[in-house]
Image (cartoon, rainbow, N blue to C red; front, side):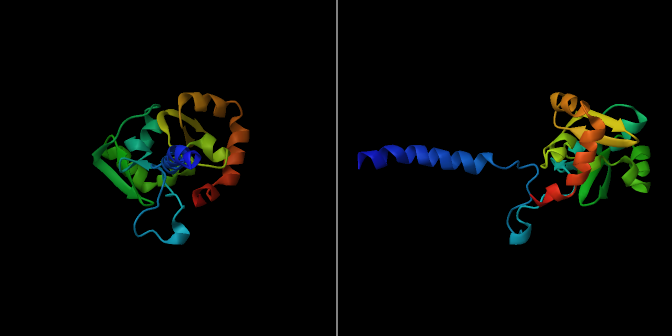
Length: 166
């Protein structure tokens, strides 16, 4: 009897740890009203705090050569996500040709997609390759991804969009 009572706190903690540590809430789409077949499907566009790519202006990567924070004043809805921009010109450029400016893999981490999963991004970890924007989880992950950019893109392209099925 003592053995059983001594183990229950460990079992409880293990269960609690598994239940809170197995999902990335920023990429989860499950919740009330979600159909069972779509319970694990992730959104096509990475959003955090209600904005795609953490509220950064995707056009600025191309025009300014750096990440620039957008604002709610200049926003555009596309593919179920709210995109924010630094100014009206960037918003209008994106609205007229979103495929030109939107990051690859829905703005999820390019390295993670290459590995067959998804992860959030750091807007500072970016690179434009052949006219396409790629984002990564962190600057350290970016360095790994840059070790074989063509190979990593080829692998990620094979995995996208299947990784959204979760």
